[in-house]
Image (cartoon, rainbow, N blue to C red; front, side, top):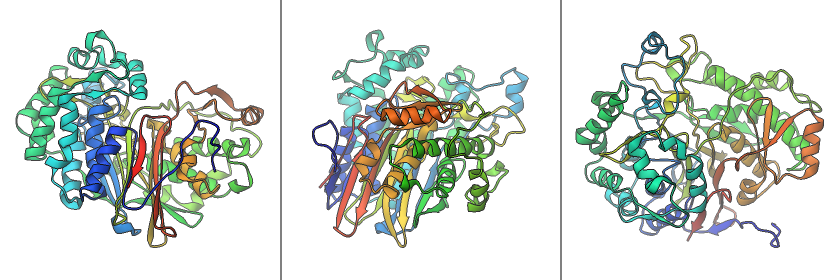
Length: 528
């Protein structure tokens, strides 16, 4: 039970349906869909569309989607990879011949073809009940009629003002009057409303063909991009087989590479060899082990994860328990690892959505433009802000994640799903760029090892080792901080809150859905 004399949130409980997002307008829109007879996938798509308008720094229709779904509360997990690809002309030699040795955020070469609209349309067709016209209506309304800027969004918006300053079209839209909108001010995206309306009426063709595709291609090519109308027309996501591991009797499901979800599974496999429950949830011992497992798992991620067509290590090997035992042997209980590579890990913005409906369809859904405001490049005719997901590509021909024609980059956004036996237990996720495997691992072990409810599990203080440096939230007890320093960890107070998560637990014993939502964001969980 939480201490009601200090600020905090209670877990939300409901019976007929539940939605949890990082924005109250999105949660409200999702709940309306559930009340109107839509299912969990309908509600997730509706929420994602609203967030593509009201959280423009974190997500948009110029970004990508991944989704996991358990139909009717079973342990069957349907997985969808809605990530976009590099242009067909994007050969590594093209970049190297021009002296380009790194793909940077503001470059048109960081823009992969957006996968979000294709994913929404496919998932709605295959698993939804309502039409896109109904599901996109709230987003169209907010884009056309205005939406109030919330506190955390204003904070992120202001911090990322530089990203939208160099592109005149983006600056005009996102820095009205030369500055980020004030908290509570109304912001409008009329061109985005028009594009969403066309998609609602015509489906994917309204985005990937015709005037919209021509306008987006023209903008990118004017900046030196290699994109063509044919690249947009060819956009297609894939149903994939989830990658899984067992943990203390549960099964944890992630999207396979090119997704980084396997990083969290490696962390869990390493940590399973330690008796975490003997330590306190905020103890230095538990936190130290999490830091070290993450460092090892990220070193694997950065050398191994890529488009599945160029993987050099099989997914089965990556989640091998025997392999994890060998990795675990590198960890000392009393001392931080030495000679840690600088991995260059960063946090970034994303939106993550959990929904469960009255039939126990459980959906874990994530939508992102990667870094705050993505590439910072805006197509003025369509209102589409492009992601910078291609920044993840390498330009080393020997690296599996080297850029190539029609290739998907290593991807950070990762929805999670927890099952046990034949039943779904919880859709969950923790957004935040590279931080996400740490967030997934902390939330799951909070629930499984320490028996915390979903809100307490999400609200607990967090750490993120970006290499030799450990960013630690200031809400940890002093003894944890001291215990980590005594083990040789170089600590830094996190410059911003770490990540943002949602989780809905299906409590069959009571016939209740129980949800937590991130206090570090503006959103909430709501049910009925």
